[in-house]
Image (cartoon, each protein chain N blue to C red):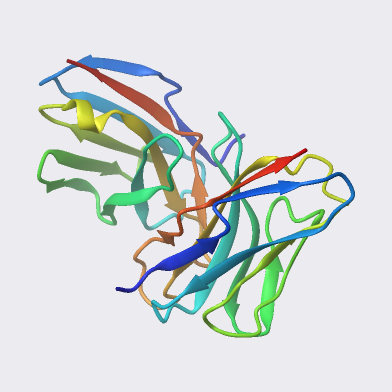
Length: 110
Length: 113
């Protein structure tokens, strides 16, 4: 069983819509969760992190965490063409190492 | 500006050669990491180090070696024993106190010719 799994995508959404990305993880003891955005040919950049159950909002991005269900999600509201990228879910499995999902590629249609 | 510098950006390796990828950070982070990224497979951990002169193998360490002689530097050598080295290599760093995620370098794309 993979440690971190993401919906495989690709996900295509019209401009202005909400993009919803999902991630599940296997280690019930995980405490911190991260979303990275990676443009084609570039390195990942951190866009959100969440530690507590519930929602965390930052601009057009909302991260949602449910530790009981071992589930973390990312919502992108008012999607823009510049949001077209691969989004990586990362989970701290302890010892300061992050485990990454395979990523979900999002395409925003103008 | 603080950050992580990886060099070179592109690297070509002939069969049987060892090559070394450079990673330098000025963020004063204690921990440094090397990941490999292949299409559709996400990031896989090669080696990591939490302190100078100490490092641990990750999930795919075979065919790779590292050193950590200085806090700022964590070079990765891809040896001839690595049979499929063509990939995008990413270096990252983080504090070991607190939990702030990683900062990544810009990556090195290695191709076997």
